[in-house]
Image 1: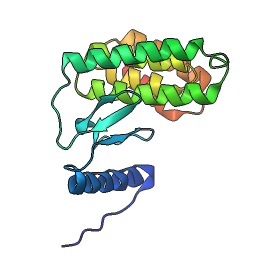
Image 2 (image 1 turned 90 degrees about the horizontal axis):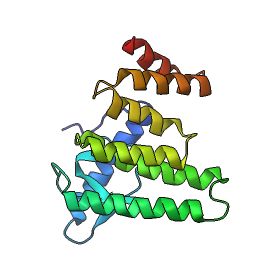
Image 3 (image 1 turned 45 degrees about the vertical axis):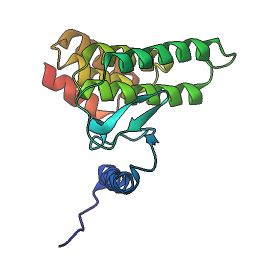
Length: 181
């Protein structure tokens, strides 16, 4: 059988990465635990991901939901991490580490959001946006995965307008805004 498939853009590369990750996991799941940093989103893997500190644990099989204990542990970990980071001299003025932590937190927020876990998704996105208010992806995903599904159009429009003001050449923000009006 033909196992080739076309590679189209960055999403195609992400899909190849997801296939490779699944293959590696499938051949080694009894030997090792797997963790990843979802700096580049892998929607195909998201049903198998759960928070584990800064990273995401890649489970051998999809998991339907996260336990209240897992959510509480994640929230406590990130609350402490956020306090510690902002107490670190120079962190608030350093964009690179703020970006890194915000991307990690937003990845975990997406894991909650795709499982329709509204409260933890909201809290995690809010944390990501506090960690790095200048990161548009956290704001955009918050709009797309939390606000719009809940029907909070006014708040979504407000955030999209702020994003358009900050990033005037980013067409996706305009397209979503147009669809909401």
